[in-house]
Image 1: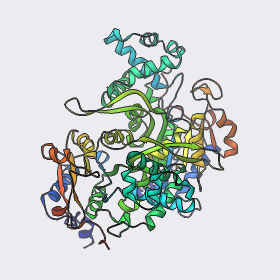
Image 2: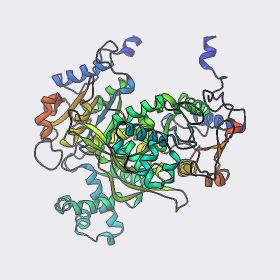
Image 3: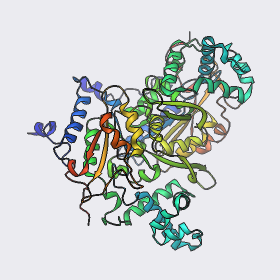
Image 4: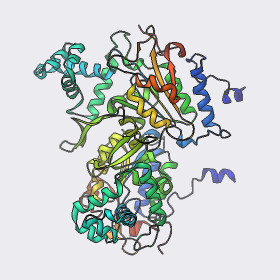
Length: 317
Length: 317
């Protein structure tokens, strides 16, 4: 009997996926690249899978969660020291008025981002993010932000790792921000989290050296930046990539342009009841070119409403 | 009998190291951090070890090997197309006159580096480096450049991996350059090779997308750059770091500033007979501050002449 459980060949690796063509295609891809007798076989070392984070592994509405962190953090800082409220953007953030911050355009956003992300050590920043995750709740679901991860994608990540894939995040989100929760939320360790980053500096003026975060963009890990970051951090082309927006287009393009078996997939937000429905319009997670070209390019488009039996691990409150 | 070989507790993990205090200290560190009963125990996930490449894992005299690649490549390119010989630096390189290139200073060096490293795809560049490694021979030893790796360090890398360490290269050398040989020479896969890099761009003008290398520095992975690159690529502080020059000082400093068991080590080039002897003077691998401060900081200084029974895996010709 132990043997039966140990082999587990009949266990469903993706129980939160409905039995649709999407699920069948994912499983068939994984089985083909891991079967030594298959023409599509890929050695374990080359089984690299890269995934966007916002909108692909966790939700991104009504705003990227990292922006909620930024606004909440400016509000917290202003309580301790109101003298920091020198700009309209900071004042709006201190009131929790996210819309007013956004209305201020890029300059307002950068002001709030710089104040909440720079001028501190990586260690202090990450301690602050961890503290924020403990207390902050999503405005419409009431869930912790790190509970708003997609159960079907958690199963996919685990399935891939069980089949000797290395799973990576390649996201426009901040690299230090995501590393705070990626290991616990997704089983993805810090060294497999690739993201946007600001300039850092090495500071030895204190008792022990620290790495400081500076208010200057170092690398924008979006669109063309994604294949470039994959090349720089991993140095191999993935055989599988997943995203949900046109910001992931080049990552899927780069991945599927390689020879042999490849799988590009888009998570399509079609479920206004259980999550959100959006694609071509708006300012977050715009998916237009990807939808237009996915079929011709052979990319799998996952219809969240039809293909997923469950969205979040726990029900919204 | 099988059991005896399988446990292998009595096998020497570092057979090319003499039985000196240096070897004892390395082994005692590894045993302490891997023994669950030890106060210094470190979980496998946190067993990160980072090593410089030039002068630490392979030789770097009379010049960084990557500069030999650059000069040889300009010479090869000039044979195909002499019209590229528009500068004194290129003309010197085409004659194989490395000293004349170096005499031209930084501008001459950058000219030769740009011509040999940029204006091509990553794929083409790496194919060129692989071809060069096959044919090029070191000017004094007659060995292939990738044969001039240090046997004691190969054993150390393997020993660490056998003890569930992740081994990384963190080098001022080019990230794309090192990845061509790091896996075969050291058992270090591309995703564990961190180095200096030039700007890249994503080019979709051809039939399939390519990543192009541009003639502009992106990141200099030396001195303060090493801890910053470790933070960006790995996101955890190593518990062990090895280097051979003051360019590695900050990496050792950052590594050993962490809490718990840490080991910083310097390879000191003391063996003019079997390799080269150099430290405080010259333009390659200068080790001055490191030598002055190693003892106070508790860093191990490996004396190549005394501590290593063997230098290269094969004898110079």
